[in-house]
Amino acid sequence: MSSMDNSVALTINSEPGWHRTWRRFASNRLALASVIFLLLLHALVGIGPLLVPHSPETTNPRNSFMGPSAEHWLGTDELGRDELSRLLHGGRVTLAVGMFSMVVAVVVGTAIGALAGYLGDVVDTLLMRFTDAMMAIPAFFLVLAAVTLLGSSPVFLVLIIGLTSWMQVARVVYGEVLKWRDSEFVQAARAVGVGGTRILVRHILPQCVPSIIVSATMGVAYAILVETAISYLGLGIQPPMPSWGNMLQNAQQYLWMMPSLAVYPGVATMLTVLAYNFLGDGLRDALDPRSR
Amino acid sequence: MLGFLIHRLWHGAVVMLFVTAITFFLVNLAPGGPAVMMRMDATAEQRQVWISRLNLDMPVHLRYLHWLKDAVRGDLGRSVNDNREVTGLIAQRLPNTMLLSVTALAISVVVGIPMGILSAIRRNSIWDYAFSVISVAGLSVPAFWFAIMLILLFSVTLNWLPSSGVATVGMGFSLTDRLRHLIMPVIVLSTTALPFIVRFTRSAMLGILQEDYVRTARAKGLGERTVYYSHALKNALIPVITQIGLLIARLVGGAVITESVFGWPGMGRLAVEASHARDFTVIMGVTVVIAAVVVIINILVDLAYTWVDPRIRYG
Image 1 (spheres, rainbow over the protein chains, first blue to last red):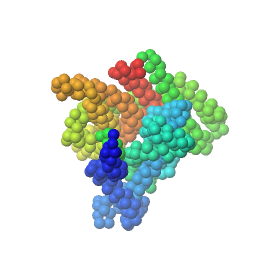
Image 2 (image 1 turned 30 degrees about the vertical axis):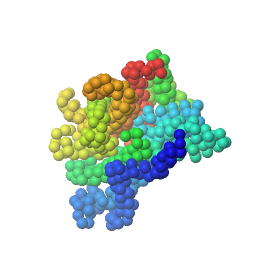
Image 3 (image 1 turned 45 degrees about the vertical axis):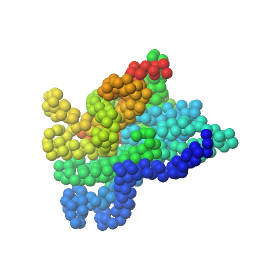
Image 4 (image 1 turned 120 degrees about the horizontal axis):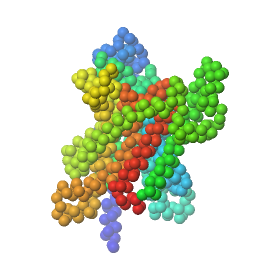
């Protein structure tokens, strides 16, 4: 066993981990296209509303159900509101709710999964049974109950969606923590006297980051679907504030008259969720090549 | 086997205890809870009836125990709005939801498993690629929007299928009429389960195909067909069965949206109606019953699992 072997190992490892991950990720065209699409989309809903001359909430009954024109690029809805402006403002609301809900879910899920996995025993049993119970309740029913009782302002909606969708993250983190808890580097840290909290936060949790990123990406997709569905049912984001979900609430009624009103917000939602899912798949394949 | 059953039932009971506690405390401690829902113009007498019926004069944990005692006996209270028994309302709606969900699940399994197998054995082929794109698309399409688009195509444009309800109003029982009403809701609901089944089957099959015993089977000269179908497939299906159990909760959740779009009188629609009417006893009852159904189905799935895979029993 010579220095020869070591030098070979060194050359192989000289390519940084993130570089290899990026190369794998970039070879996935769908994932790459999704990143570009999402960047453009976020820029568009970020800047777009500033450029559109019409307010998304100003009604003008005499102009209802107009087709596309130079004045209204995508036409107007049943109350004569500019569809493009509503689409851009609604996108802001939907994307923001999706993003922040994911943050809530990741924070709660990581905390629960990490504590259960690291502390073990009674804490493990209690927290993971609680997680099982939350998974057994079809989340959508819980969301319905919660919006009814707590209300559905955007902030509540974020909390409700986040607090009903952290279980996947908790299970992923739990599994990872169990895997690393007794690994050699953790034992080494413990041996030199590093405290429990520090071991968990500085040594174990960083190992979980790739899995958390993947779950988070998929989490945004899920949260967007829940927001649009609950708003479609008239129980989420309340008019006149537009969201991609509540824009479809009335569209079904006017399907016979003006199907395009049902098409735009739906296509926008679908492409966004699709892109987040492709991105999540791409990240998973790049971070963990064994999964594909 | 009996030990396993007892263990699973105990586990299910614990989960249900959590479920009831979560929903009960959510409903009763929320700022918009029962105390606030009392009408402002209620007379003192009406208030008293309300208070005694909902045990509002008790501390919340005792109220929970009372509720639990009644629930175990099959009494989920009465609707706040029209005083009908919650169990009665649910009994009317549950069969419709089960019909929809079971049909959708059956179709997802029958279509999804072959898709997953084909993806795995023709890995990286055009089929594999096409099925994986279809799966991600199915996961990404908002169910209610997909439903609206189907209505736009099949009801509005082509006028082939009815856009809502379980049967044509005023028409006697007709199987074809029932089936025509079932088609679009089932398609929509299937898209919430199918992608998962395709993915699980594919990855389970891929995992199995790397096992030593599959290599042995090939090495001793068995045809690919025999290797796939009589050696690999059986073992690949075991994890798929567990995943199907986990899909039930998702499927039932998807039913809320599907039922709402298609005016399908099931549990999901009941929950949405109760939600609009702020009828919290109904919301609670529906949530608890749906969770119980999910837990029971999962226990049955786990039992099926031990039957398929004898190792579990002794493990």
